[in-house]
Image (tube, rainbow, N blue to C red; front, side, top):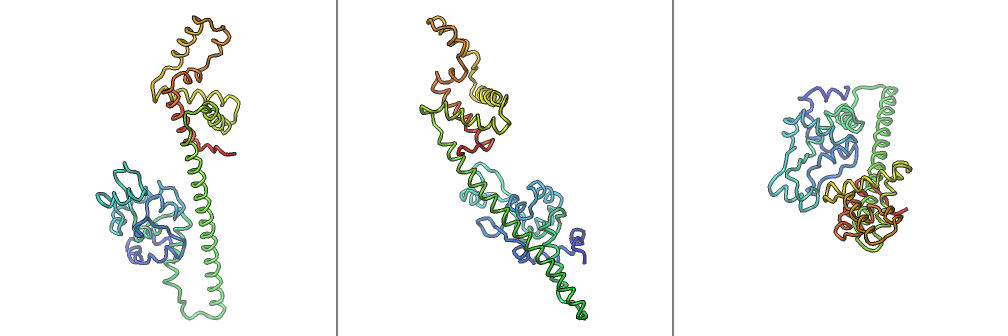
Length: 286
């Protein structure tokens, strides 16, 4: 039986929803701290598709999936996941997917090798006892099943390696974020913020990108905290001239010098650069 028949038949899907054991047989399954459900992100990771694909499938098949335990949690359940750090403190809702619902997603999802493996496994267990095969037919049958098993196992290993890589990337990003957040308005703030902005510019090819990134930081400072740096710069240049500062020094005054003259602006600017470093995944080491 072609496993895609599960995609087309509601009644056939209904007959397999108890077979949640198949999920772990096809691929290692991680659960939320309640040990019962997964999130939409985790469902996407299991089937190796974007979260939006899972979201769209849920939208199209919500009644079926809700009958299998998919739900939007609230009240004490929502607080439970917040306290464990699974979702943000300000989250107003959280969708959880039971193992039965996750299995049904595998029976519905077209463009996923893992979902196909789930469907194949479900139907294979039904047909696992061939009837009255000759010796040659039996050998061919077992050889085919061995090939399918090796394919699923290779896919599982690849998925595990990809999961490990993603976890490693997440750990590195977390370490970089911690280092970025440690940036403070000390004596080296100009050097440290410039280093971060230079790394962002290098990621864009260098050259004109250096000034472009610097200007982006100034624009973000103005939009978030309100200082008109160009006006302040002109006012500072006027004062410098009245105080007898040489015209060359006046001409070389930068917006960064303007920021350096105001302690609050320094703090605001560091906040902006920190946010840029996190947004653009800047690696401070190396």
